[in-house]
Figure 1 (cartoon, rainbow, N blue to C red):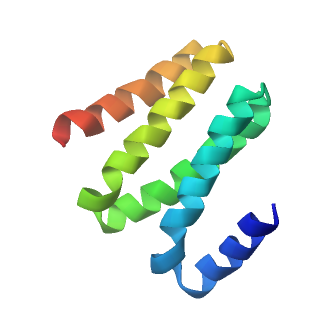
Figure 2 (figure 1 turned 120 degrees about the horizontal axis):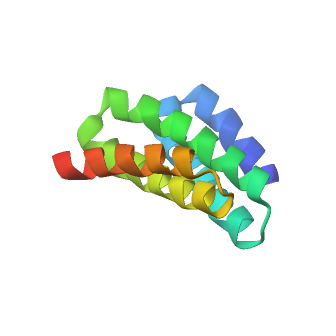
Figure 3 (figure 1 turned 60 degrees about the vertical axis):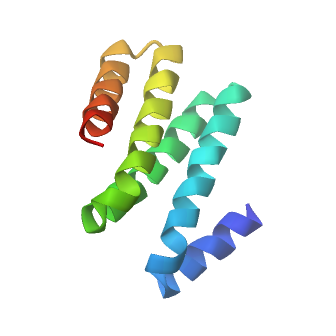
Length: 102
């Protein structure tokens, strides 16, 4: 967690340089938490990564929409595992919409 905290501080000082890395780290934590059945923590990590990636994609869609789609897909798979099928469908549909445009 110390790395995450330090990266978060750096991202405040220079968001353009560090927020993509923060989002990637959060997405990877989500995968790890999902793999170890820590589903609520996985959802929180994916959601935080998605929030950052939405912001980044607003500023630079060509660069960040593919990463946003990846996090949406990961969150959709997690929601399927958790039995939240309506939420899973929403995530997968949004990811598919992005992928069709790319």
